[in-house]
Image (cartoon, rainbow, N blue to C red; front, side, top):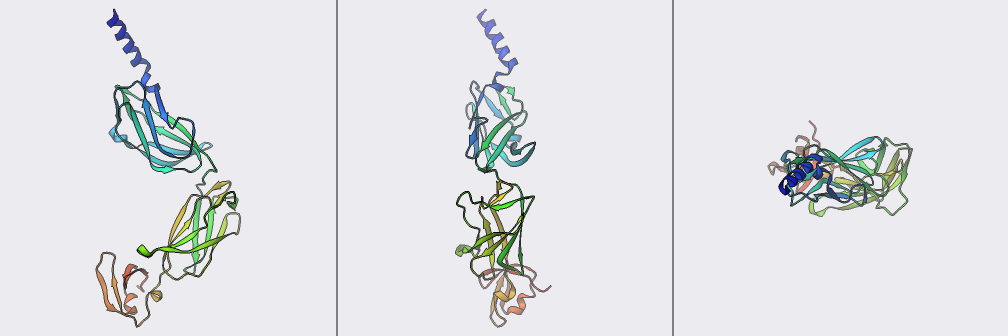
Amino acid sequence: MKKTITTIFMVLLALIGVHAQDYTVMPENGTAVESLTDITITWENATTITVDPMMMVGGAKVYMVDGESKTFISDIFCGPAWGNAVTLSLMSATSNAGDYIVEIPDAMFTVDEEVISAFTLYYTIGGIPTSTATFDIQIQDNSLDNIYITVSPCEELLLNESEEVEAPFLIHNIGFNSYVATTYTITITGANTATLTAEKPLENGNYSLHIPKNTFLIDNKVNPALVREFDTSAVHSVTNDTQEVNVYDLNGVQVVNKGDANQLGRLRPGIYIVNGVKKMLRGNR
């Protein structure tokens, strides 16, 4: 009789899918968190959990939700189960403010031979939401003294004055000797436009512009951190006509040996090492 009751009980457990419902999540589902990085799911009464190997990378996905729309944020990596728990790791961790959903597809997990149906987790990251607007960043006359920004879509562009934020800055990219070449002051010039003005003159070279997160308020949302590459190098800034030059391509092959500036103009456009310095040559072809 006891054996019969036990058998019936086990059949009932299988029928009602106890393992599909009996799990806990850390961070707790539906809570506010500072960031989304790792999410651990534990089936309390499980003895065996398997993960579909085809879904270990990119099976689960994270989206930011805004009203009825959602924006893809990151794929998820899920390693094999440890005991009765699995850990989901975002491929791109996020701390941007907003509401998020984590979508787990059908049959990603099997718990004690029971295939788990699709389910969704919900999280909120506090603070001002991060905008997904596009930044068009332009310069004129090959000069980085003034940088012109247009944000779209955007009905109102403001400076974020609610907290201290780092000013936009320019890195001079010259290998291990890279340094901050200048910082920029910001002028809002229209409903969705702004100008960055360098605080000191700049020489030609290869640079990266950094606009820190929270610099702007875009329709009451902050901008993400932005990086843009610029190269204002030119042949005339590499050398004068009488200086001897040695030029290598990026594969280390010497293409000019003890030449002069005129030979630089005959090279195919591209990036070269000129007298030990990486330069963009535009040629005259």
